Length: 183
Length: 268
Image (tube, each protein chain N blue to C red):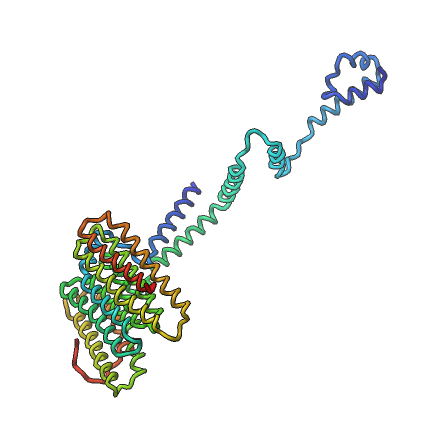
């Protein structure tokens, strides 16, 4: 009796422990899901590959590299806006998280680095100012869509929005050049 | 037969209470030997009544060891014996400490349950994304772009581009039986772009770079990436005969890009 009780307790404890775990990385999707995801992301991946290769082919710490980086982020925003328009909150959350990571770890530090190295009054500096303004406008457009669009009531979309809030003003500081250009 | 001989023979008997007929004759007529025989018989009876002390703990093992050293025909299952002894000890331990162990298990259960159900404020939002929308290839490409944005050296760029090419090639092969020809052609196009416009271009830059990286290091780097492209080509080639004709065309494009890239990286 005692042995049975003891075994049961151990099993319950193990089951509870296992249930409490959450995977660090998601397992590979099933083939049919992979196909669906490929179709949904085909155009986005194509754009990201092109901009990635362009980034590799431009010199470090140049406005040109920031430009390609900002275009990559714009591709992500376009995909988010499309998903938001369809009311696809899950996709919005997934893409917004990726966008947040990309801006926080890629675009923002690159912008800061390049800004620190070039003269803001030089043609390169002015170009950088415009790109920075565009990046900021992109982010504002995204936040506006997520707060007013079809997915605004989704709890997880709202959580993703909080992540975007952390990107400003430190992630994308206010531009020094007041240009209204957006894309 | 004198008395000493008779008494010695009585002592040598396996059981002095059972005197053989050859000695009986003398014992019955000799008072001294009769008393000797009675004393020996009484001593034997007393010895039989003595309590037997328990054998030492390792005595059985020692005895078995001796038997084994004599190479018996049947070897005892030594591991089973040890396991049996260990299991027996464990059972005894569990039986004696059931209450404590049950308490310990219950405490662990409560602790684990509390940990599991306590909300963790720092949990990253990525963990909450359902797998339904999480596309590993997209995530890898975004991470690749993030790394390329910050890549400040040719070796770092090569490393990131090679990883992106590997990821795309692996996914293309994985989708070769289920995706349409158009979709596979797109994937092969991504691979081709990264290899031709990215890797090969950076490899040429690396060769031209006059300072910073020793020639031997450049060769080693480029050779390692060429070997990865070679592996991509080999795996794609193996798959060619197993997929539909329209998928074969896309895979051939990937195969050609891998071979061309390999040649460029090797400076051929």
